[in-house]
Image 1 (spheres, rainbow, N blue to C red):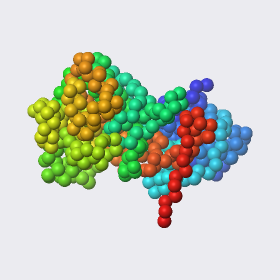
Image 2: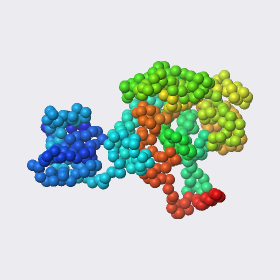
Image 3: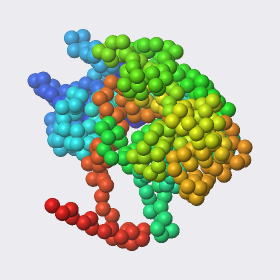
Image 4: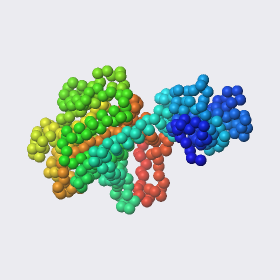
Length: 475
């Protein structure tokens, strides 16, 4: 007999069906026993009566969170027992057969309610239990629907979804790389990608023209509030586009997401306002302004664009860049606004050069950013020179990009959204961990898997790695 999802049982009154799930609650009313059975789709009331003694005696032993298989008839509830709050509230199941699939010990915390009051590290340690919570289950379902919507939208816009490598080369992009030792080439390392930035530009050089990816990004950063060492981007790139084209595509996609998935929310203003970086800093003291007129209304979405960023800023306090005077405000691959190209090529008036960078802001949070890219080797090389790289280092670190752009690379640009951030804001969650299936703590630990962890001596020897005991600090 095929399994029915609980949400579908209400359509089969009078029929015998098979359902599987977790015992949500157990209760007795006189001699009649009831359980609420839960699966991913909903909750169904199940009734056990003494006239079926074998099933009835087994039902007496049931406890919350046991998994069971039940076969029985779907019947209408008495009128005074109808529950309009749930999809199956007008029916219940009269049981013919009960099978216990697995038993459960007492859970370390309650999965009823929103769970915000429970110690977060305990929730992460038992994340597979926390995910049974209605709120988290719904967050992941909505995240799936949003990603599916994005895929369909971009496919209709003739974008191609392409996966890029996870094992790549260590190149400075403003944060520490996670590095992976090579067993076959002793002393050499791969790096995990901080973003697909270089690969997506190389896809443009390869003539693919319109690319997107739901991409994992990995950055070995120091603890920084609501951040994760690995996070998910919606990454897009297109050839033969200008700044307005990318911004228009992004705006149309965001408006469509709200209209189709969040009809209860209202976008404050369309088209999205555009603010110069200089004006944003002067008026709001931040480049992520919260433009909501009523900040108490969580269903108001105030999108805006921040544009005309300085290309470079002074200081070199970020990892990966030389200890020179200048560093990029975003990344080194952006193209300057056309009127500043001569200054870039001649490395003059550097503090005045503006870039084609654009950031998309929602209610005071940056949810995405992108730019038109330098697609000529000459311009890209000048950026690297300005931030302090010597010729040989440019070739060593970025020679593959410089080489690719010698063979007729198209003008191109794109954007990357912080998908975790967008979903958390749309779901009214306090942080991105609430919309990630298996998040890590702020300092990068996974309490559930107990990672990071040591590896065996044999593994270290195979990788040609020797661990030195850290020296104790003098008191």
